[in-house]
Structures are given as C-alpha cells and as structure tokens.
Image (tube, rainbow, N blue to C red; front, side, top):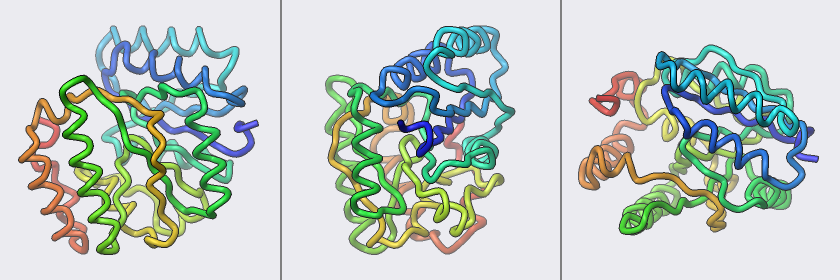
Length: 238
C-alpha cells in the first residue's frame, strides 16, 4: 500500500475543475487506498471552493484528503510537508494529471530500487505543444549534467528525510522555488524517470512564451547561489 510510503502535497489557488480532476486521477492510481493528500489552498473564488468540496466528498472513499491554508507555491508546499510522516513526499501541482494508473507505484519502485533522493518525470501536453516540453527536457538534462538538478515543482518525488536535510521549501521564495530546492540535491541521487504518465496543459508556455521561459531558466541558474533572486516574482504571476 502506498499510504504508508507516500504523502501527496498539492498547492492550490483558484484551480476550479483542475483540482477535482487531479484528485480524481490520484484516486485511480494502483495501491493508493487511504493515501494522505494534503491540499494547501489559498483560493478566493466560489467555484474553486465548490470543486474542492466536491473532490473531498467524492473521493473520501479512496483517499485521506486534508485541506489546509496555503499561499504561494513554496509556502503551500512547506505547510503541507510539515504534516508528512511517510518516507516519501510527492509535490504535485493541481494541473498535473496522472494519466497512467501506475505512475505513482512505478515512481515509488524506481526511487526505492535506485535509492534516489529526488525523482521527477517528463510531461505530455496539448497537441501542438509537446515540442515545448521536450525542449524543457533538454534544458533539464543540461542542468543535471552541469551539476544542478532541476525537478519542476509540478512533480517532485522526494525522500522526506533528504527534503528536510536540504532545508525544505523556503516560504518567502516567490519564483523558481522548485529549482532552488532541487538544485541542492546531489546529481548522483537525482533521477529523471522517463515514464510518460503525467499530463498537463500548456498554459505556462502560452502565457509567457518559450523564449521568456528559457531566459528565466538561464537567469535562475546564474543566480543559483543568490537567495534574494528567488524572493522576487519576476512578473511570473502577472
């Protein structure tokens, strides 16, 4: 049973039906019964409150769902992680859909077999935009090769002990907080598991553009030892 091994933490703000669909697909994962799912929510829209309530009502037969106060993603993930008592924490975004019902059990088995401290997976997305994610995969691989692993916050499968050893999420980081924490992991203990079991929308690329995303990734790398850089939002949330 995954319930004794994994706690899932999801930051959420006005995700609407996304959070319902996300939880629904978690509920379909193999060996998922009674797994703790912590939703760190900071929504202020009635529609999102309704979908969150419906997710709790519809999937309580399968999951142990708890909703707590959240904030920006780093804050939400930090607060959720404080409640985790399992050997592993999965940080999952509300718009990440686990399209394959073996995603979590496969990730757990790989993390266990290779004794990884942090594991992530590539994403599939909308037709016509998968090339953007494959470009991101390339930049992620380059980051790994040069010694600063990058696991996107949408799917970070952490060994809990190591997550706290590197300091956990820093709540006042407003930008690239996922890179900030994953870059602290030893490359030898980091895995990009090539299992395409996760799907997400292309909204980030559509909103900001590919070139903007590439530029900000480069800036994040150059500022990897500058904590103040990550405490500014750099217009990411605008």
